[in-house]
Image (cartoon, rainbow, N blue to C red; front, side):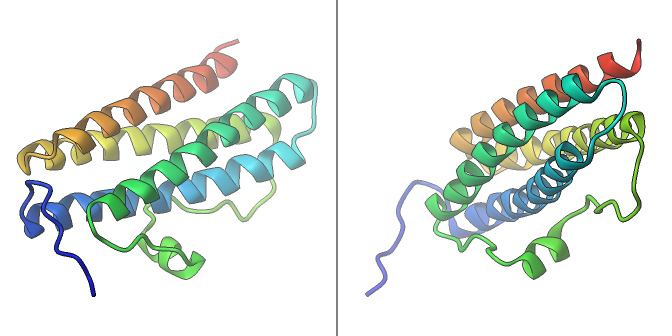
Length: 158
């Protein structure tokens, strides 16, 4: 028997916030795969630095992915768990073509900045629906993506 969820948020509010989280989960997966692929395929003079940076970033994304899925479940909603479902929800796109080292950095910067913009909108949805826990959670993710984007931008400014 399914237990009725009583966490102080109406079902419509939980559905709205879960939808934000599901889209974020999808974008985080695309960004994770892209970052991991760039880590594997980076070449050039900045190989060592970028190889390590990409690894640090995909490790952070892996942690976020799990936390986002768990937040969706805490709202009593199913977390999308197939690549088909995630790609359907994602705003970010995969890279099909081989990129040079600085094109990789720029692509990741652009994706982190897109996630930042999406997070700002998601924070507003959580606030509007009175979901303080997920609002705080999304603000924390926003800060992580802002830092990741800054690190990538700093490599391009040299």
